[in-house]
Image 1 (spheres, helix red, strand yellow):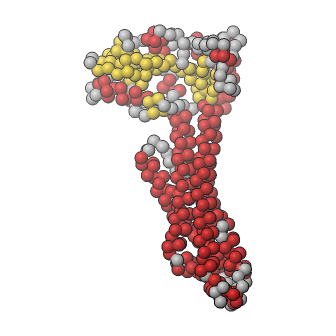
Image 2: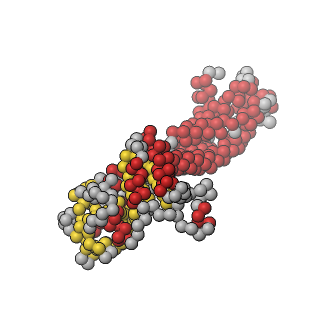
Image 3: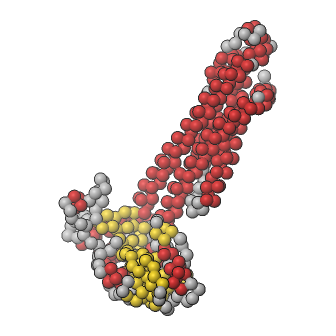
Length: 402
């Protein structure tokens, strides 16, 4: 029997029992759709994190106060000590490294932003003019923080786009005065709308010179130092130089943590990829359930088609051919269920993408291939027993219906 005849015979058998065929296809398609949707969510989360880190800037190295050990606890914390502060002088000393292109010291706090009767609690970031380039921000109106000595304060600020809309509406904001806490600042610029980045909404941010932020919050320490390496080839050198410079300035103590953007991103990428594979594997269990359903239904089909099988064997069909017919039925069922499942999975992914537009939901190619291959393999695997049982039937007894 030719392959075309085998497929035609198998499809005819499936069309002869439409309800049974529909139920088996439904079970297989639900399993494939579950794999596609869940892996699409996992891949969307991974891409979201990658995009968020990319928006932080390129060639980024970050200096944090306190030493993070393998266990996640700094040795000083066990004895009740607090990490040594990072200062503006520490930040400036980092520029001695030939691998470092620019730095942006950062101090973060909260204060009440007010203009007339309008008040709003906001996050205030104190930094320098280089923050614009290091963090890949863009100015919508006016200009960013002025260049100059980072130790000098200035009563100027840059508003996030939403802050400008809330305080000034359609009025001109640049050149106007606002109050942050107990100090007055003149607005010199408004950031372009940029949305959220790593949990911080830059549209709701107010940026002032770092020395002014220190006066506002009555502190001299930095939250962190953002470093931009000269190129990707200099990232590791910039990290090493930053650690050594901080050790020299802190009396030989390694009391800061220096991390690279690539290292953090690689960690998140591994975690989220593993999570995607895990949820895809859990969803693939439903394909095994569908395979068991195919096996059970085919066993029933063998009992119902005893005379048909007996006639085929009486006409000279070998056991191998009988097995091939059942394998063909399982393959057609699995293929049709996979196609239907892919359609359902992609439709579900599109709906989730519409509901959560910030999440780049898209099933990875390997998950689609794995789901289809698993569905096809499961269908054929669980058809082995019914196929072997049918092939072993005695043709005379089968024709007699026994």
